[in-house]
Amino acid sequence: MFVEAAGGGVIVDADGNSFIDFGSGTPVTKAGDSAADLERAASQLRRSAV
Image (cartoon, rainbow, N blue to C red; front, side, top):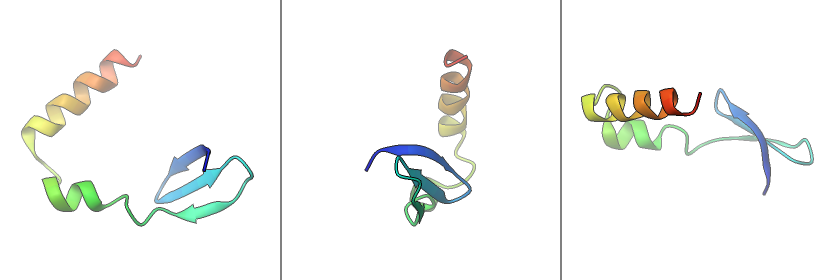
């Protein structure tokens, strides 16, 4: 599958098909929604991507 877009729990492939992203909550379930180290790393990645 070639992903064209993703967000809000939906993945859209290159053919325009939409799929529910059942795996989108898995990282939160495993790591928690406010793990300080993960928040810091995500912020650094976000800043470096700009």
